[in-house]
Length: 149
Image (tube, rainbow, N blue to C red; front, side, top):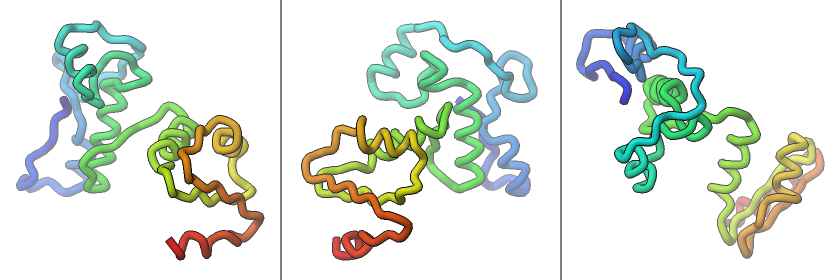
């Protein structure tokens, strides 16, 4: 979707980072800002989404031209293969916890955790069987459990 500069170009990293993810739509020099929340559902887009394509333009909370451009810029700066952007910190936190919470795992967190995250872990997260959640007071008193794994 976005345009990337050739790896062997003579441009410095900063220039490559600025231009990474640029999507020239129409005659635009830079990626335009899209204020739309939905995109036209074409057969091609639906097929891509149904096949598991992560960056399919269907609904802006899932993916958008602008969030994809930001993700590509982050990849350029950090040398990553892919990146995700989120509309809120809680969306990023809950997605990360859901992805990393596996049976036999351990979530070790501080008692000073953000209230929304604490609520998510305590009241919303359906813990996989065998997932242990340890809340420590000011010090990570349960850290020895992590090192024993």
